[in-house]
Length: 424
Image 1 (tube, helix red, strand yellow):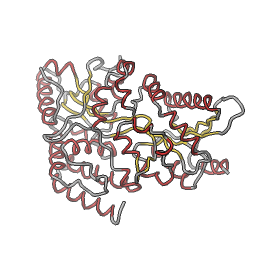
Image 2 (cartoon, helix red, strand yellow):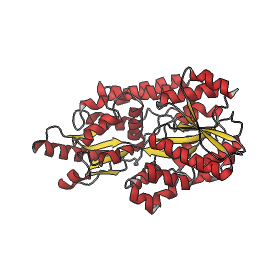
Image 3 (cartoon, one colour):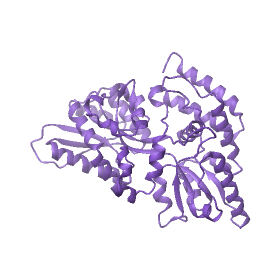
Image 4 (spheres, helix red, strand yellow):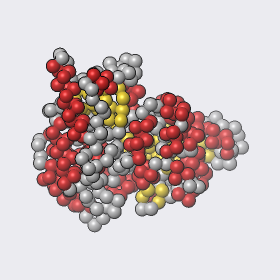
């Protein structure tokens, strides 16, 4: 049955099966869908093989599409058909709400291991009171800055958005006067896509303006603090930020910063190693801190990362959960951090001497995770994509065509309530 279903799905989206070379006489075979990309696949395969060796079971690695959109579509097809083809799924941090009806509540099966993780990550994985996945590795927005330039101008890394604006302008003006006409103050992800929602959520939450939709499902985005946050952001465009930022995603922002043409950049942790790589024009000059906050707010960062979930249609849900517990354990997460640079989700690992020596930005990450904000995907469930689209389009209008923040947020709240209708 499973083979026929896989064959049928293969005509739409290809999946590749790799049987790990484990010794014979196994009690069960667990299929695990994890990333097919380079070191991710290597580390996933090695850890799964170790669990198989320790427990006397087999693990099949299911190689999934690289595209997150295609991978989600594949998962939805298999789960909607109640397929048992995959026991354990690697899912994005915003997918528990979309896939939750098809996933096992892991809380009774983890033996309390979930309590080791940052609370914000457990919140993102919890839908209707059930733990739909276990955190595997985490991301959050960070502020990158040119340490050499701030030192040259006698400036400290900014704690507030006002300080960032002032420092960016001072350094940018000074550098331009010295002949670097291409220098800008601050770059971020301003294209109308999911990345802009992440940036906007950080601005709004750091001003004390909430999370757009709160944990009860109420639309909260139309408030003075959110309007103040967007007013500040709109003021950056074409002053300390190039107009081109309105088409920037992560890589365009990194390109400008890494070529030495920006003082500050908002980006995910992956950019740290690249910015300080030998071929980078700013190698050895880049540091990170938590993102700034508004006058009455707090530092924050939008949560990213990946989780592991167990299918309700698995033939071996308890064994699959045991595999998840092992893969998300402190031992495995430390190895993944050391060998692959994947940020742990277990709070205690941020004090580990080996990891602090290997990943210098961990201190900033720990502070960010302590105040990180989750996108409202768990509460808005399968309407999340419509919510995200509405938010980033409204914010883009504020940044690009000068829409008044108060009016834009009022219209956005109306649209979100129409999407919600009788409930999420």
